[in-house]
Image 1 (cartoon, rainbow, N blue to C red):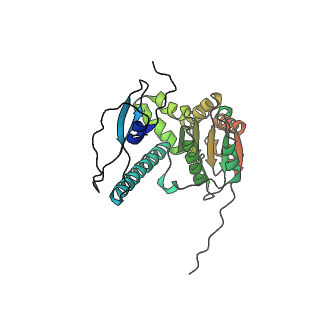
Image 2 (image 1 turned 45 degrees about the horizontal axis):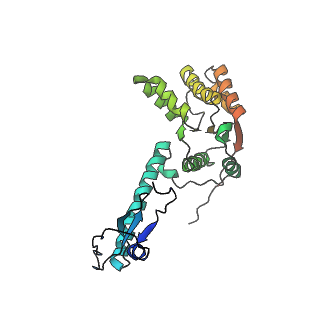
Image 3 (image 1 turned 90 degrees about the vertical axis):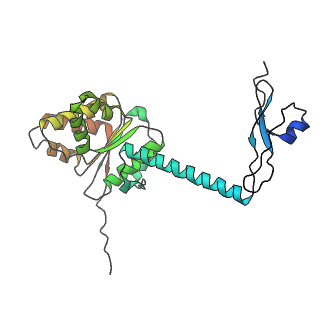
Length: 263
């Protein structure tokens, strides 16, 4: 057997001749645009034999234009695949260009360690940028290779309820099993027994598995506890909020400044 470190870099016809390498005569190839003969290129395999694998690209105007067209098409395909992947994460088209603009969130992402199970509790008034910030984080986590789901609490509960027609356990597993779960607008849901029990199951399962949960809300932690207790589910409300307090760093977003449009 030939040495393991034998070179496998590309070799031109002239290099093969100069090095005295035995080779089969390559088939003639010409540029489809200018009809110029194209120089063959090959590789030397582990057995020491030279195999022709292609030709040197032509630099005529037609060939360059065709390569650019192919590159543009490939770039567009990759962008479509990336958009589809982000949509599966829950990112909405309106926030496709979201960027991390809050210093505390940027600091959290810079020092993120999945194994610590630490999340964020982002709260502020309506239109303070909570969903925008959540979307920017979804993109950051996805681009870093983590499995992330961004959802509203209402959509998450609807998804779990719909799974009752099939595998109810699978409905919970999707939200429990991802690396990072981002629950947007928690506090908007009903506070009945099923809702509070289901929310607790998800939050507690992630707490016990040391998986980061990030929430956004119009309510402070104390306000959320009060909001969730409005139908008498005091114990569940307290348990959910205390799990979030223990694992999440609080980030407060100020009201967005009013923008006055001038005629």
